[in-house]
Image (cartoon, rainbow, N blue to C red; front, side, top):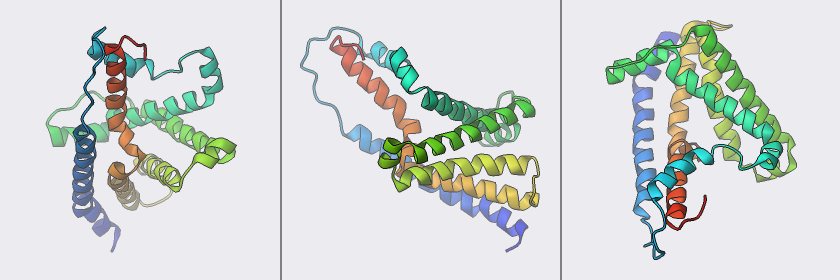
Length: 220
């Protein structure tokens, strides 16, 4: 298989396979969550649970107090550096917006390439910093599983190969682009079966927790 054939495969059958697995897998995961139902709340309704749930989505996104912030500063900065950088790369890079526009029929303005490059580098450095902490912190290393390292690699590779292919670094462009697309497809396939699902379930769980606490008049 030459580079042209490889690129055609990852853009065609490979992408279709990954999207089918991702879509069906995520639908099953979400159905599993929603089919669990919820117990009837027998406590007296004390507040609007909906607004409390929305508030919890934001309040749980930062450490609860200064002591918590001080203890988790490294994780907080590296985690936000990675997530913000990843968001910028996915949704504000011109080729990605063009791809979304071809699928959905609409798009939005992109950021200048140097700005996206900066966020890409921030995301890559943040991911490497988080890996270093996982490998060197005794408690985090003990709690880590093979899945954690697999998810790290599956997230790191699309960023790295995307940066390399966009700037035509070191290897032939067609091979780099093909490997980049393949790494994204690998990430999509892993998504429903790993901790990556938190990208969808995070806000649902935070809202539900806040809603239940709010209805009982408890701060969450």
